[in-house]
Image 1 (cartoon, helix red, strand yellow):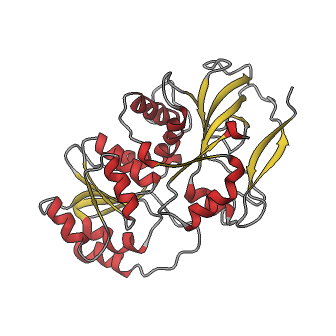
Image 2: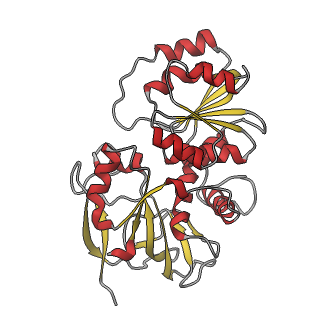
Image 3: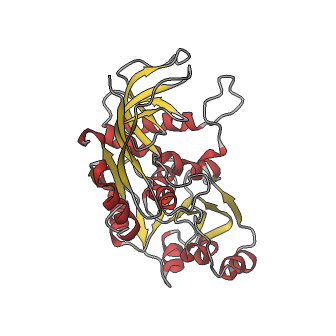
Length: 337
């Protein structure tokens, strides 16, 4: 029986490495022991952790956001799983984990690499859940990284006409390849371009998916329709100094009826409410996303830029930090360690 496993660790600010650690063991009746096949990197959260910016993740810290693997064993109170079953978990970057927060069975026939993107789509779904945008509305998404791209796709699936905005040519190309109908670059002509696409109606919802870049702060109110909304899907991780006058002036002078909302996936309970008093849960969101994937409704192929061994973790995080055009979707392959 194995006594050691291996995981990614952030030993100190700016570093990432692979290390051995004691094999996890089941100690609680709700535990699920999983041997991971793949895990996806969440660039924003994990780079913030690697930099030592998250108070809840003091260094050294073992990162991770979502993983797909096979069930090895489980506690007495686990009823819906079987040994050998493939599951998606909110698990860490490790060969073996105890399933954390949510463990959802993966439908048969789904590519496990693609399934890892459902974890990031669960973050994106918070925007469409929080938004009042409806069938036929125009929606602008500022920032076309993983979270922004998947958010744009989800709004499209809800019947909205989506405009993706990003300075990166490559990310705009990825968005087009994912089926997002309109992509533009930020700049002086952006408002006029959005007005042309919407025939002057502007956007019922503007989704900020960059973590509050200066582009989003200055332009979001200008892109919103009257009685529209600005949904903050991202937020700064480090101290953020910016001139908020354009944003506030835009709200006050140009579009006083605009609503500003925050959208965080953790606004919902973890597990589904069997009594039905709470309509949404993170567990339900993930299950719905996997059903969408089963029907080919989420396009993740253009988003996978790196499928790598966890042994390459330091270079991967360096790429995510310094070569954002090249590193979009990074998935660790745990069969390589």
